[in-house]
Each structure stands twice: as structure tokens, then as C-alpha cells.
Image (cartoon, rainbow, N blue to C red; front, top):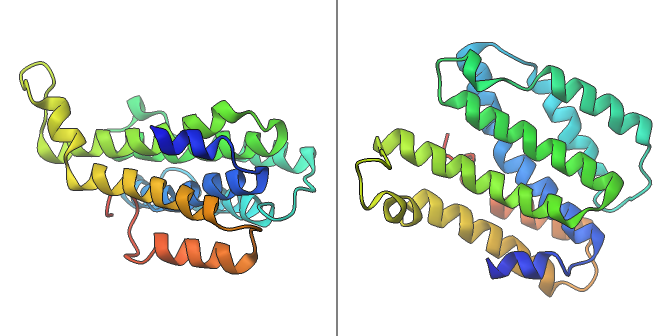
Length: 194
């Protein structure tokens, strides 16, 4: 995807903003899972996202704080095989995106950005398979149906739009972050429309 090539060339704070925005978009998936199963603690996931948010424009991190957040994240990450709901996989993706994002604050590995983007797309892919009752072993149009589903088109458009916006602004400011979060959350849904 060409928008990822642009993302990988952006300054660190803009890359962190993309990671944070993805976490925000997927957080409602975790809430949905929690409301169905009672597993986990959304406030711990929220704390990790808030830490990430606070460090988009301030790169003065404390490794010990991130380690503590990662410990809490691990405790609240579901194992999908232990649940009888597709939402466990969506919650796992939320936690995985946050894991990659918090680690990105420390190591700045660009492959984490690609993983963050892919996990958000994978969540949508899995959800489309669920709601459309798709089976790759019997449906010759399986991948086409996923790629052309409105939710998949929307997730890819959001990612591309965020990266284009981040690429066009000169210096990332708090007003830009407020604009990005309001645009992304204009419908008050997750990337799965939950």
C-alpha cells in the first residue's frame, strides 16, 4: 500500500500520531468485547492509549512507565480460543495494536507501523467474514468480497486520509491532533461500526 510508504518517511511524531489514532479507532472493539464477556479492564487499555496520546508531541518517555503499561496490557489481552465470540479476536487486535504502539515509543522500529496498519485491516477482514458468513474454501470470490466491502474500503480510506493529512501539515500541533481525532470519530463507531 503506497500510503504506508509515505507513513514510513514521516517524522517520528507524525508516525506516533498514526499509531495513537489507530489505537483510538480500535478501542471500541475492546469495549464491545468486554461488554459481552466481562473479561479484562478497559481502563487499563485506555491508560495505555492515553499515555501514547500524551507522547505524540512529547517524546520524553519513561521506560519504566511503558513496561508497567505493557504488563497491564498483557493481563488484559484475551486469548481468542478461550471465548466463544468473534469479538475476542477484535479485542486481541486492539491489544496488539497498543502493544506495537507503546513499543514504537521506545524503539522507533518502522516495521511496527506496518504491523499496526495491518492489524487494523485484519480486524475488519475478520469481522466481514463473520457478518457475511464467508468461507474461503467454498467461495471463489472470497477475497474480492472482503476487499470491496464498505467497511474494508472505509478502513483503508481512513488510514490513507490520516497519512495524507499528516504528510501535508508542516509542524504537528495539538489543533491538528484534535482535527484528526474528530474526523476519525465523526461517526462515534469503531472500525467495525460497533
